[in-house]
Each structure stands twice: as structure tokens, then as C-alpha cells.
Image (cartoon, rainbow, N blue to C red; front, top):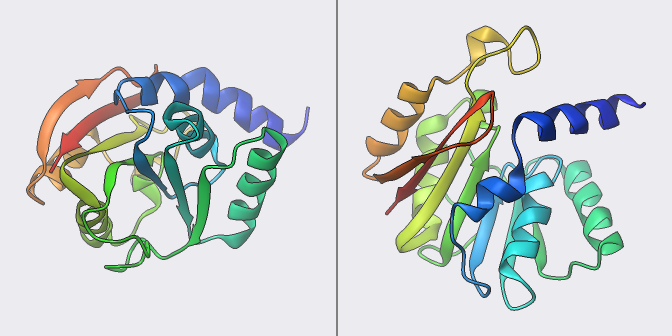
Amino acid sequence: MFLGDWLLVNILMFSDPQKNIEQLDLEKSAKVADFGAGSGFYTIALSRAVGGEGRVYAVDIQKDLLEKIKNTAKLEGLHNIEYVWGDLERLGGSKIQENSLDAVVIANILFQVENREVFVTEAKRVIKPNGRILVIDWADSFSGMGPEASRVITKAQAQKLFTDKGLKLVREIEAGSHHYGFIFSK
């Protein structure tokens, strides 16, 4: 088994993107973004969830990861994804129009973000009034399985980060055995 395969198996064992996205109750024609798309697990699940009439924006700062997502989507016959090379730690860095999306997914990325205030502001900027933000992140480092212990953003810290930006907590969700999850709205 290759390292990438091992990582995929372990991530999916701890947190299921499809199950987490189902808790957002997206319409088939929804416009959504995957902020920090990374490996594309959430992008692909979002693409299936919103169907052919929906639109998914995979946003990441690493061009090679966006290319890998594009290749996976092509192999799976998914054609409703736009690939955006952007810096989510800059206001406007997603290159997505203000108040244009039904939802943003932020999964397993908060611990990597340096400028979290701007990152959250950018997510809030692109969602419509009453739009939602799904936040999933590691609850701990789990002996090296998650992020370094010093980089973990606790559930309480994450909740405060989003509510301090004027977002309303809709509900906490079950996000897997090693993750926490929230849905916030504008």
C-alpha cells in the first residue's frame, strides 16, 4: 500500500466526507466551495451532492493538488467543478464573487491556516445571506495521526473564531471519531 493510499484509508476511517456533507442538506442546484480543497475528498463529494445543475469551486493555493482533483473528477465523469488557485488568507483570495454561494466547506484545514481571521472573513464574504459554512477539523493530534498537538484548533476555539466574525452557530454535527463539526450561517 502506498503512503497516499494509507492516508486516504485512515482519513476516511475517521471522517466521512459524504456523510458530513449530507448534514448540510444541499439543494441539487447549490453553488458551494471547498476552501483548502487539498486532496479533493470533499470537492468530489460536494460535486455528487449538488448534481449537474450545481457548481463546486475547489479552492487551494497548491496548483498540483488542484490538478489531481481535476484528474479524479474527469475519471469519475464529474463536470460541475471549477478549480481556483487562490490564497484564502487574503480577503478576496478565493476569487469568488461576494454573496454568491449557498455554502462553503472548511475541512481539515484550520490547523494549517496562519491568518484564521481573514480566512473566516473570506468564507463569510462569499456566502449568501443565510448561506452556511460547514467546519470539520481534527479534535486532537491522536499520536501523530492528526496535526501536531501544538497546531490543533480546539472545538471551543473554532466555534469562537466563527461566532466572533458574526456567524451564527446552527448546530454541531457528528463528524467522525477523531473530528468535530459545526454548521454556521450568515
